Length: 124
Image (cartoon, rainbow, N blue to C red; front, side, top):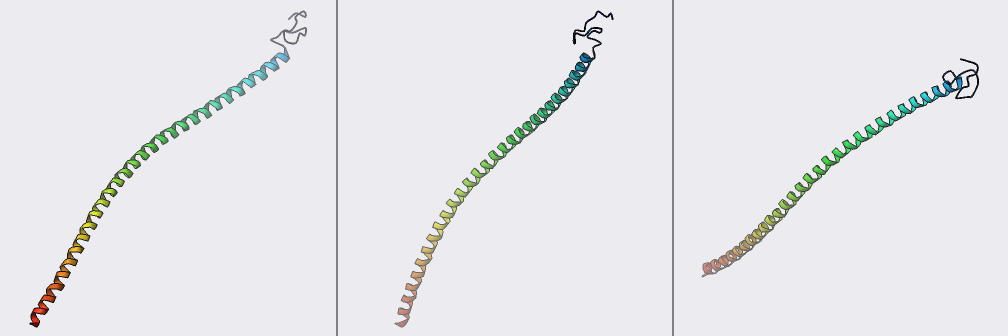
């Protein structure tokens, strides 16, 4: 280097930008900052990837739960229908039981009448 050279970085005489200690220090610091930034970006990408995977897993879980809810709603509808049919059967059976009870009561009354007639006949 000739003594007439002037540094483009610090404007000092006697060295150029490639050999300037100030420029080299700033360059080294910038390279470290870039490395740190790249690592931070990589960590952020990994975090976003993990979050996106978790969101995808949760979306699948929601779809499964929606399917389960639909299945359960169908089962409930079927059971409600069967319950309504059972109520009709019970109501019909209650009506039959009432009819049989009325018939038994009528037969008892006839039996009482028949006994009364027999008793009056046997007294004669």
